[in-house]
Structure formats: C-alpha cells, structure tokens
Length: 124
Image 1 (cartoon, helix red, strand yellow):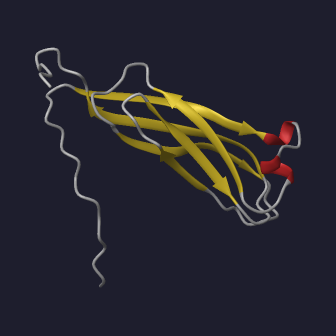
Image 2 (cartoon, helix red, strand yellow):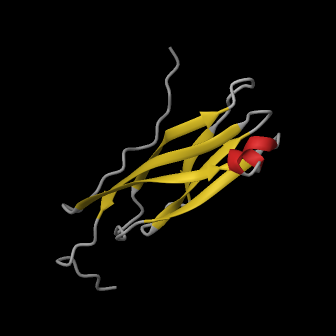
C-alpha cells in the first residue's frame, strides 16, 4: 500500500483555544438563472467570511456542504474549500465545471485556533 503524505500537525502553544462556526448560503442561482444553474464549464462562487473575534494566528478551517441542491440529469461536480485564511477570516470557495447544474449551496464552516492572550506581552 502506498504511503500517503500528510501535512504536519498544527500545534497551538496557547491554552486559550477558540472555536468559531457558521453557515453561509453561497448562491441560489436557480431563482434568477445564474451561472451555476444555467452556464457550463468552469464556474466559481466565493464568499468572504469574517470571524466575530480575531484569532492570534491563522486558525485551522474546515468547510463542508450543508445543503446541496442540484439538477439530476448531469454529473455532479463540486470542489469546496477554504482559501486565504487569516486570523480575521477566510474565503469560502465553491467550484464546479462541465455541464453540472447547481441550483444552490449552503456551506458550513468551523475554525479552530489560538486566541490572543493578554498575559503574553509582545516586546518586539
């Protein structure tokens, strides 16, 4: 069996660990014949997510499909990911391609990371 390379585990030095979560309707294109519903080829929807409180460093972000409404006569192709992750937020990106017809998508997300600690002074 081939060995699968994985990224190193992210370690948090702070005892203050924050968890933020939410859900975003990324698009609802069937209502107005938008590109995810009516077009073909590569398409992308991008939603900027801002955390309610900033982390001290970029957190680990997990995204998942919360609701997926598609037309059933074509192949269903999807790529959902978090990009441009910062302590303040990230971009949630949904991509499809080919002749897939996507009516609407709701994506759920969770961010886990260290919080600022008032007891640690930055003396730089």
